[in-house]
Image: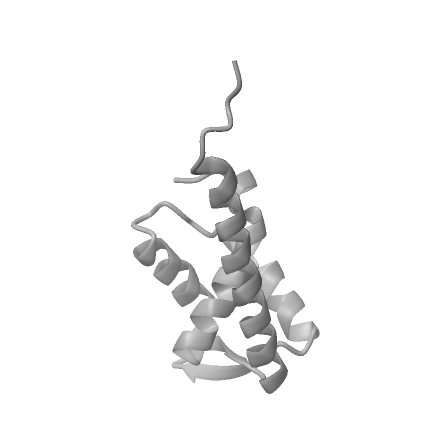
Length: 112
């Protein structure tokens, strides 16, 4: 599993990508999908996930829908139109960042 320091800046882009591709997910489902896709290397805690989801909702990037399953309510998150545009921008930025990091880590920069 990667350190929290390493993954902290990538959690929002990961969440946006999953919601963009899946159309609608609830919090626990997002965390489990990330764990599954990364083979357990990225584990998003509730303490990290829900503040991001709430912030994205208050910024108008996500909207929510409560669905009652028995007596329990499940809150589903979906992208707004603004959110889809934002997700595309963030996805482009993260891909560029990955390319930039590879310039550093995929070359020999050590000097004697």
